[in-house]
Length: 115
Image (spheres, rainbow, N blue to C red):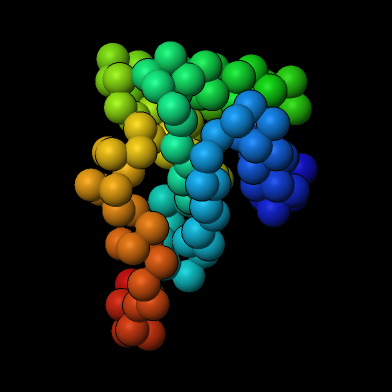
């Protein structure tokens, strides 16, 4: 399945399950770690856990068997690694503190993007 389509499916799953402030960042010209990063907020530690578990279950139904959750012990943050797409799910205060949108949305000079 095309990565962009998977990104859209992830965004829909998060939206359908009441994630807040869903943001996607195109990483293809910025990093080799993934093609996209999706950042969303949950309302409580229970909501973060639920969102991450639902997301992994739905992606596995689509045949993405290698998805996994990082941050299982954390009450403020979960990461779903779906290989080509990284999904961060934060408690709103932690999201503001780490401000990944700012860090990853900034344009890189051409010479740094080539590395």
